Amino acid sequence: ASPDFTPDQTRSDSEPPRSTVATLADRWDIRPDHTWLRGQRPEHTVRFDEDGSVNIYGYPEAVKVLTNPQIFSNDVGRLFLDEGVDLDEKVQEGSLLQSDPPAHGKLRKLVSRAFTPKTIADLEPRIVALTRELLDQAGDQGTLELVGALTYPLPVIVICELLGVPASDRDLFKKWVDRMEQSASALLDDEVDDENVDVAAANRYVPEMHEYLAAQVAERRRNPKDDLLTSLVQAEVDGDRLTDAQVLNFANELLVVGHATTSALLGNLVLCLDAYPETAARVRADRSLVPGAVEESLRFLSPVAAIYRATTKEFELDGHHVDADRLVRVWVGAANRDPRQFTDPETFDPARDPNPHIGFSHGIHFCLGAPLARLESIIALNMLLDRYPELSIDPADPPTFMALPDAIGVATLPLRTG
Ligand code: HEM
Image 1 (tube, helix red, strand yellow):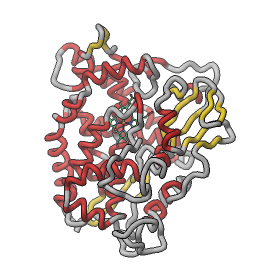
Image 2 (image 1 turned 180 degrees about the vertical axis):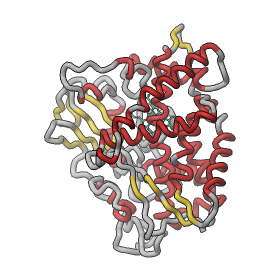
Image 3 (image 1 turned 45 degrees about the vertical axis):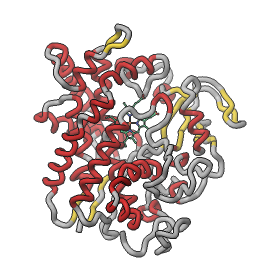
Image 4 (image 1 turned 135 degrees about the vertical axis):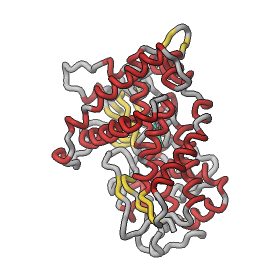
């Protein structure tokens, strides 16, 4: 970090203020509208937009929404459909994220039979080897663009390994993930210049990828292997199994929800450590702090900044009346800095314990991939610290950020590595 910057002047004996740039968010101009990243509390914990949608900024209010799926449904897509348009149920089949109880519980139970803590833990040696391989490829010239070198490719390759996609087909997945992200940016961000993104081409990944995955699923039914696709095909609860469409949509969902998020987490973690050099030195010297640093960066700079729900009926939330069929945005990033829940919320503290952040959501939709995201991040950070004496941002070559409006994460992160 440059010597004239301290991200947070409200704290701290250990990291004295060094400049007029008050926060990490200001320093890199991260989401100017996310004022909570700048130490400001939203005036109200619940706020209505003119269109009747609801914004939740407080921690207890967020938990109330996330633990009440009967009123706050994950089937948000229906709010955006023009009247008379039927959702293609086939696309939703197998999606945990878009389903509500009781279907969600049944699906999650089935998928959890395959996606177990042991499945994840067994990946550890492969993640170590892949991280080493990627960093070896990047070389050691005293600088490293972290996203291109590591945080973008690693999660895709790991999901491919997990599913059992042959290594020779990994490049196909990388291409699909690129397109997926282009098409999501074009869809969600008004500022993305559609002329620069061939949206039609970007969207073609969907049928191509489905066709590929369908063939892989059929193959697993004929020739079971030791991989997640096979476990998904074979998983059984009370005599029920997943259909082919459910298996392939779920595999697709893993890529959609497990890629940009993990990449963002790793980048944000390094961004936080760069901003707090003394804390970074402590983590470097005492690696038992690494898991805590991962959790704290999920709280401090939550990659998923907002979680969406749709109200199924009218209700009262802390004295506010909300109609049915309204969009609810749970601002995870704001709730994770609620002083009613977190002591010194503006302090980046890897030793924070307990740290009940909701960066992975809360309740029945709690991120199924959290153990994997944690494992990848812990391995990657340890290896970065082992390899490079320095991991700092050159202010002359600042990071850039993802265009998605509800995500916070670097798109490029050039580092000086010593
Ligand atoms: C759900 C965040 C990585 C798989 C979620 C949700 C959040 C989240 C916020 C819940 C959304 C909601 O409540 O509507 C993250 C973050 C990650 C990450 C911040 C990385 C830092 C992963 C990975 C995978 C994964 C690596 C798998 C490979 C899932 C799945 C769900 C989910 C399957 C749906 C669970 C359900 O609806 O029951 N994630 N995720 N995630 N995540 Fe993650």
